[in-house]
Length: 556
Image (cartoon, rainbow, N blue to C red; front, side):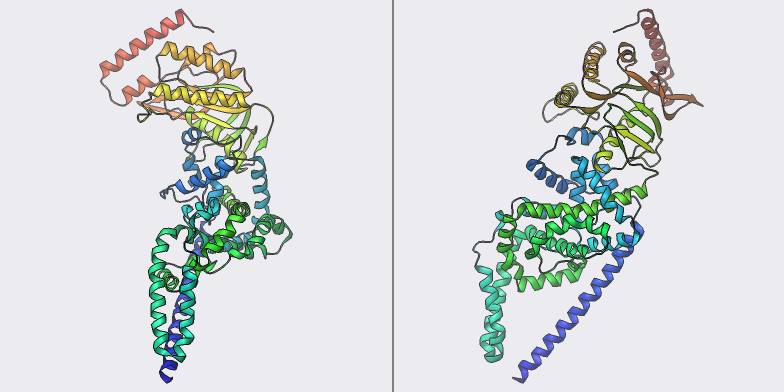
């Protein structure tokens, strides 16, 4: 009996020592992360940090399959505008729910979402409240998006079978402890057998359902954070957090072990905790019950996940605004036009801004590398950010709320056996189909460049004239100065300039009215050191072509 008492004291001391170690590690990790919170707000994320977006993209695809809006940014537009890079530029989210929600807002911007985000940001502008909210979201932490995907959209598919196995093993472990005090040999034998069986079966099952287990623990952490967020006082904040409170209230059953502070565990401490769960698999005992509950409350769980993600996105947008050179809230109009003051591209470290007005039909011309492609990308990104983040990289931006489609950075599709021109036609066809469905904005860079000049001019003219007659805004960048003459009655023209100075071609990246009157392709050949005879011959041939065009001008 005395030996049993001594063994119990040793176990108790080990437990206290382990608990103290865990608490110290937790507090140290929390302090380190909170210091990073204070210093990181209002700064752009590390541009060198690259990470895959497969997880958030799959989450968005699942949500889009449930309900897809008309304003969705399609894959071609997303790639043309390098929206992955924009997402990384904006993303300073503290939770996986925030990351998923931010991606979805950029993919499928909605008027109500942007305005609601603006309302959420109002109370969070106060530094003390903002830091309090950030700390709670940080303690909830992040989990890989694959861990949440099946739980949010098909929870019942991962059930443990047979369902009685782990409750039986846990009951055997519990029975062995009192048995140990009254019949040590039998108690110890039962404990060893139960722990060995629990460890073996636990390891086997965890390999299969590890993602779902991590997802459940993460959901519990979010519910832990939600409860504390709802406890924060303030009228404006209570209105802001109301959707989270409403969605979280019926989900109390999902709160449990490892919520909240578990996000701070790392290294050896996390290993110890995982070992304890392997020996005493309480989470596996509750696993099937929680999956059944999530299946019944699937819509509510999704709503909660997005509601708490919206709070994180509001913090994210606040930080973005602090990090920009300057920004504005958008003004919305019903006119097919874009009015802008000091508009710039959000992904450039040292952008050049432009001011002006783009009507429903616009041609942008200019030499190679003069800035016309970057400019129309800035227009398209400005429209998307206005609707999704209620934040524009400009001093003023007035746009119409409508879907955005582009045809820019196309490539040959070798796997499908398609040429560049076929790929380009398909890209344009989807724009024409979108225009038939309703008002939209379309931005095209070098229309139909994949074919010969006479047919390119004829086809481009036909497409652009058709777009001019529709309920859409069209801005096209082109090298074909002939298009500006053919379409001078339908399309307003702007251009970018360059100058040759000390053997170098210099650009000011400023937007000017009217079509371009200069060319620089042959000049670039000379600057890059090509043989002088080749460059001279090219200039002679180009001059002869210009004389022929002047002698017999084309018109529409």
